[in-house]
Length: 185
Image (cartoon, rainbow, N blue to C red):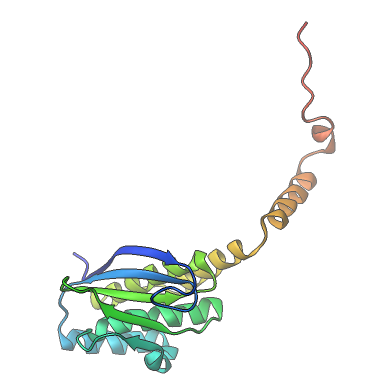
C-alpha cells in the first residue's frame, strides 16, 4: 500500500475560497510516517531537487497539526512546476475537518493541463523515495513540459501544422477531390 494517495481533485475558478487565482484543490490521504523516515525523505528530495530548499516559505499552513511530509509533497509540486513550466506560485495545505489522515492541498496554476499531473508526479516521487526506489525526474519534467506546450498552442495552429505535414507526405493527386464520390446509376 502507498503511504499517500490523492483521493479527490477539483479545478476551481479564480476568486474562490482558497485562492485569488484558478487552482487545483486536492485531498491527500496519508498513512502515518515516522519522523526518521520523513527526515530521510527530506534529504533525498533535496538531493534530487536542489531548488526545493528555497520553497519552504512558499507553502502556507492552515493548521498546526499538518505533518512535514504533506508540506514536502506541496513543495515538491511547486518545484516541479518551477522546473517544468518556469512558474513560481504559493501553495497551501490544511487538514480536512473530521477526517484524520486527510489533508487539503491548494495549488494555483496558469496551465491547467499540467496542474493535476504535477501533483500526481510529486506524490509518485515522494512515495518512490519513501520506499527507497529511484524516480526519473528528468522524464517526468519532460512530460509536464509537453503537456503544458501541447495545451498552450492554439488548436488551429496544430491543425495547420498537421495539414502541412500531410500535404508533404501524401501525393497531391490524392487531395484533388476528396469529397467527390462517383455515382452508381
